[in-house]
Image 1 (spheres, rainbow, N blue to C red):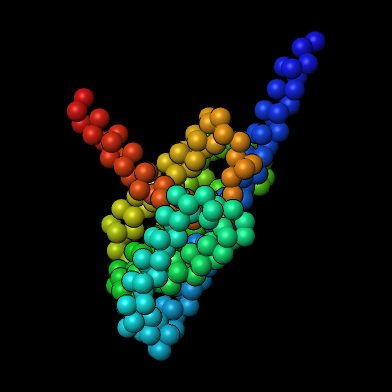
Image 2: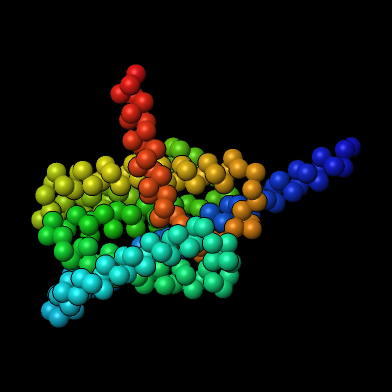
Length: 233
């Protein structure tokens, strides 16, 4: 028996399990960010005077928190020192606080409530991914990703359709956009973790939950690229 092959197989299995744990923590922390933002935004919408109106009035504070969110994303992406505990935890907490305030301000200044609706859709997808990640020991394939994204978004869509006065066409367009985003977000992350040679046990999920927002740019760039290729053909 080739001992080196056995050892290599064992290491590969262990790394795979650590990579799966990284995904579990990543999706969980991502869901927590969105949950806090949705709760804060819901409170601001439910109590406009003086709470919600105060957030809306001080737009300078909201813009500052938005800029800080971008700075924290760049720090978590490009500064190795910020990708290690405890600095990564501090950045994650600060980012979450800034994001919830900026997201609530966007929802408050949006009379169509589509921003608030999009937050609920993203939260549903993140919770679905987190539940699946913790309930299995395998990577999420494309079919499962489509099912989770579709079912999660459909539940939110029906709830807003019944209990809100948001325009149907707006609900539908945002639904399609978020479904595409949710699917390709998981696809890109899964492709990197599953196909890469890097051991993600050395990666920090706290900073990863901040860097994940940069994936939104890559997702829509990839989607536009696919549309461009199909049009050229």
